[in-house]
Length: 198
Length: 198
Image (cartoon, rainbow over the protein chains, first blue to last red):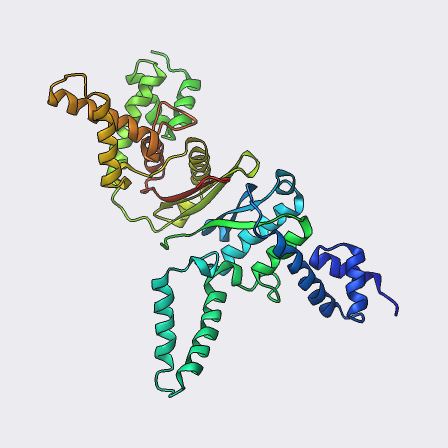
């Protein structure tokens, strides 16, 4: 099978993974770019997971001012070495995540940051919507779990579809960069101010 | 008495008040720039105070990234009209206050934002320092008040000496701009991230 170099380059650009690995994945996917990316993402994720427990003491504070000063974002993204922090691509990642936060307005970083009270309230709202449906409790529980997943995608930064490529989540965007840099990366905090809104 | 135009210009630049008023103040101060500024500041403050209760629904979100991404600041500064918000000098003020926050690391906007617990603790620390001094209680109270003032100057943005001109406080810097624009201006919130520090 002939491998189109342009396709390999596109995959490399979208995943940040080395040319050889991209070529292998494209062969494995029989020339289908999307499939090749899925293959690489799975591998990338596997590699990223090993690193996700490593300490991150370096990093960058980034900011983004949107709409002529009506919205502003401040974010701290950590990595393991100052070498990576000063890398142009890491700076680009910080910029893109700031921009994402400005546009997508997350309330939390991860679903683990939601307080038990808010979570319970959300479950209550979902149950209320289905209270006349006469579904058995085990089905209702599944519905609640599914709807909660949707809720996380709305309010949790890591679960939100990435604003510049909604086929991946912000979590996956970060994982791709963990694989790329070979270092753990963590979004540790953010602030988002919208003019006149608390 | 002859009035030096350069001096009038310097006063105007430092206070933002009209040339005529600067000239009058310089005459009143017998050519002494610092005295003239004090005179103007008193007038400016008087004018600013009238405006300090007015509603501020417009403004700008500003940010400042310091030390190559190790410190970042996000600030919301409000004014009354979008016309003032879009003014170059207002933008400059937002920038300067962001820079000040990055450098001076305030913990609160105003002394009113300090919780009663923290305030009580601070008073306790001061009293402890003087417990062997055998000063009468009314003197001790005065000392506590004085030391509290110093504490405010350390931790409250509005009471801090302005980093680019420590002869004025940030409160006075803002008051000067209230006088200049003829609109109320309010620093409503800020976030300051320092890499790896909570």
